[in-house]
Amino acid sequence: MHAVPAERISTANDLPIQDRGRYVLYWMRAARRPFWNFSLQHAVQRAIELQRPLLIVETLACDEPCANLRHHHFALDGMADNARQFADKSVAYHPFVEQQPGQIGALLTQIGQETCLLVTDEHPLLEQRQQLSALAKALPICIEVIDGNGILPLRATDRDFTTAYSFRRFLQRQLAGHLLTMPLADPLRETRLPQLKKKPEILSKPESTFSDNLLKGQHNSLYQLPIDQQVQPVKQSGGYQAAEVLFERFLAEGLPRYVEQRNQPEREITSGLSAHLRWGHISPHQLVQRLLTQEGWTPGHLSLECRGQRSGWWGLNENSEAFLDQLITWRELGYQLCHRRDDYQQVDSLPEWAQQTLNHHADDPRPYLYSAEELAASQTHDALWNAAQRQLVREGRIHNYLRMLWGKKILEWSPSPKAALKVMIDLNDRLALDGRDPNSYSGIGWCLGRFDRAWGPERPIFGKIRYMSSLNTARKVSVKNYLRRYGPD
Image (spheres, helix red, strand yellow):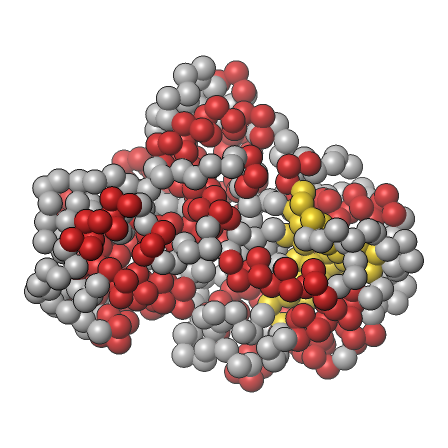
């Protein structure tokens, strides 16, 4: 068993390990997968060192912002995958779907009384950090927090990055060493841990066994939960198995055409893994390793020049380099932002130049103004925007290129940048399977100037914010079939 790099390990309190505890507890809340999981790897290592059984508890909250049927269905697919995978392993796995607010905290507090050590996933979102802080105050045991969020550890830098270029340049100087410290593909392979002879009594109570029925496909029980019942499930399946199938298909069919066609809404060229990454069903480390292995890559391919260039640094073909830039540079830029700031959902977190230009044009006349309800219902004059919003409602996603247009037009049609940001976050968090994710918040903020630069000419409403229009988009990419596919019901 290989040790997890020290810079990926932190503690939520200063308490010691309880030698009298019966087991090591891994609270699975972000890295929801059995493979390529630094947290699971560390929990296994601790269980070996302490000669204790390992109890894995994966939780799904009902009181998180925007909890709904769509998100719960997707997460439950992953839980079912995990239950099957852990069934014949030397660990005890227990899925727990909260039925009333506060049950997860009560569950962990009670289980923690018999725990010698609690290991959990680090998550950069504010509410997740606050939840962990509250648990650390309630539990009299050591809590170790493991960062498996990206190829670059969250604490590998102590500075803010204002552009993708500056972050990419930093990555090119620092990333090589982290590529050599990947998590184990299967932390439980050929591992024998002591058996947990008796689960904590609370795991046998009705509020705990409720989750077992859900994993057996009895999803009607979801309609009993205090979650948003209006946002319906979609066809896309969650779980690590579905994620791996998607990625293999992308490598074979999408990657060879990625640069040329990824911005075409009528082509399924992108990986489609954004939701799986958000829910932790697949690791970015696994994706990077799989791609590099396919390309026959070695560290010797890396360029000695670290100038922040978009291509050429990896020593790969242009398609692979473009995909890695999206997966690492742009995704992890969002994670760094949310890790360092609490105001990432606020206009005040935008760059100073963006705030100034938006404020300067705050009183500009808006040719069109739409309410949040009209936008949610795709009731605008813009057929392409309406189609993108319908895709979000029906499928829980928008094509990546049109997602940028979607955000820009909300800015144009809202009474203020603050109102626009609120609408974008609300629609995305509720409807998108990858909502409530650092990568989503950075993408939404980009529509208002985050990680971008000032553009000219200066325009009404937008000021120096990069401008997009549906007319220009339709000239650049083919949308005829997209409009037909996502037309009115």
